[in-house]
Image (tube, rainbow over the protein chains, first blue to last red):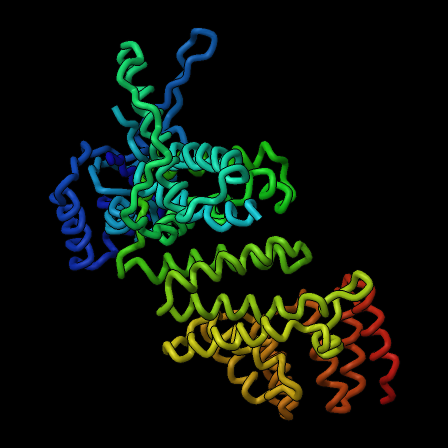
Length: 118
Length: 387
């Protein structure tokens, strides 16, 4: 089974913010280490690094006109912050890996989405 | 008669087929086909010696035929070498019982709770979609959609068909037991068929997990509560435990429940179902052992963090003789919208002969109470105050 794991940062402290700076050096290192471990897990294909959702532009087309708005489609807090792919035995394995994503325990959540076969 | 055989065999046959075919829909379709053939033949030819093996083999052969036919069609070749299903040649290798795998799949936490309930009743319980819809008072179409969506998710999301490994088992077992207990409580409110179905499912779980104290205890709890079914209602209203006609209690069910409870305790169980079953068992004694009940309610309250359970603990402490300690607990609870809290408080104050405060508490309880019966009871008690 192939899964896409979508990381929603929610209230997770992110590098470059005050909340991040308030974390101890040890905590910051632990976050980087956890992502490093996930990227090296057999079956994982890391996603490209995404810039912050604040930098997104949302595009709609209405009656042939292209309309753009500043920011992500959903609220910034709910926006996608990152993703990776995981080829796993079953959903339980994907859930276990999702639970190890730092965002899942720091105020965000991870969505496990199965990829269509074939 | 045949219907009973079907009902008893459905879960095991379906579980075996899912194990063989790895697909819920195919398994269900094949099982239905096999049961339909049986319904036609068995009354005429008699029930085969090994009915279960017959059903599984027949269903499996039908499914294999179907898969072959689909493949052939897909390849746009003519139907040539497809042999007829040989449902009369029974495979004698023993069929593993895979009902546990099935129930853990159906109660996977990635499915919505209402889907877990429906799926468990449909697959393990053998209820039809229409029966489940009726039991939960939703249109047939809604229930059919719920089942289709759940089965689709199992397949597309890769929900495993297996008993979870040890590190996942406690959580997953709790989910399975919660589904069965939810079905029971739906039935306990009046629809007896669901309560019976839950007891049947609970019996299967207890049999499949003989060393799991919580599975034994859940069955005990359901049996002990269900034993009082006939005494719980009179003229369409609920009769409180203390006022129930004990001759209407089902002694056999009580004995069976207590046997299960003893087994759970012997297995070292002290989980929430063991505590609840022990409480249910003690409530059937006359007179009740209130100090023991108080200590069990206390243990359950610490485990669940439930203020309602603490209220029960307070009542037991009061019955055991310590009104002051009971009142201290009640005053500590944050259940201001719960009329039982105020009714209990009023009763404690009345017994402590603090009538003025009791009157205020009765008034608050009367503001919140909804059932007329209870209102009349509270009004009577309030009127008896003298101080």
